[in-house]
Image (cartoon, rainbow, N blue to C red; front, side, top):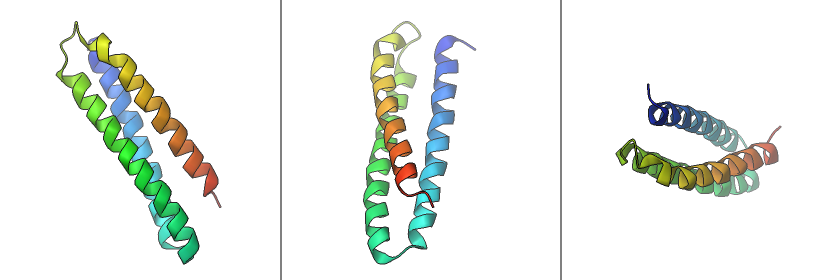
Length: 96
């Protein structure tokens, strides 16, 4: 496996972890009071948007040739850093 494929595999695994965390938040929201559901749902929508952005960046990365993928790697990492922070913040905020 080349560096690009390994990087994509790593990013897909991280994205899967974040999707699982999002599913946990959704489950928590469904068992909460109406006020809490509203707050959690707001964060869920924001996280879903960021996860979609991450998927888009990953798709863009996949489309690049082996030689050109470095040029988009910084954009992917920036999106990942933002998503990571958002997931951590939402998880911490709504922990039991």
